[in-house]
Length: 284
Image 1 (tube, one colour):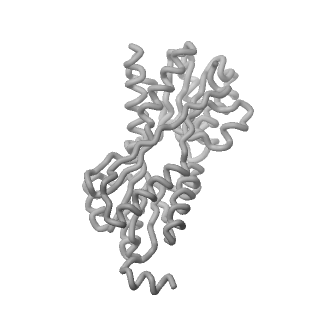
Image 2: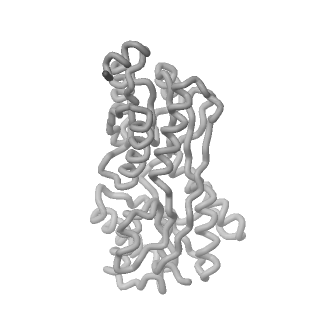
Image 3: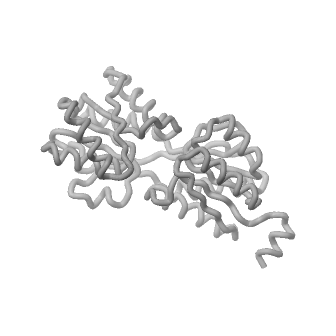
């Protein structure tokens, strides 16, 4: 049985997963990918939410250490690098999703959001847009935001445009609050003609704010999202976005983790390319 096999092999046959929030549609598919590979390897998973809070992350890491999990998939860590290294050294094997590589301590799976932002800027300029804004998380310096911002600036630089984009710290607790913040900001920026959003839900909030102000999508303002969640295709205005193969992100992370559990540390980082999916929220 499972207990006997665990005792005989000195393994728990459990891996841990730390994510910001199971309520986020993005992570549900990532988790499904991890669980699929775990099941193939006759492993169970222990899932913990950090809610983007450093203290919760530390508590989660300590809990997984106490449970002697055989490995950890760690989504979008927000701990400082020094703290992160210290915590990961105590894990038997680990893979991070959405973080800079930190040597041999952990495998890494990232989505190439840097190149995606360059592609988004090129598309918007190709359809005649010049005043491009980016709606970003409040004071977020983690890898996913940093790479978006770096890619945006490089995309603007490539086209000899102002490399200081219009940044909007307009992310609220839900779509309604985000929409209200975007609406307030848009009232002060009448020349904006394109908005790139951190994710699809923020793009929905942006479109709602534009509707209330009488802006037409995409004639007046073009909107680009990220993630390509299922709602992106069935909204009144279908969303131009980047399709991220979330299941594959999770499955890839899990496969690398099981390699590391088995002693193979040859895959430090894997980069997954998102697919730009053009729909009705940007001009053709």
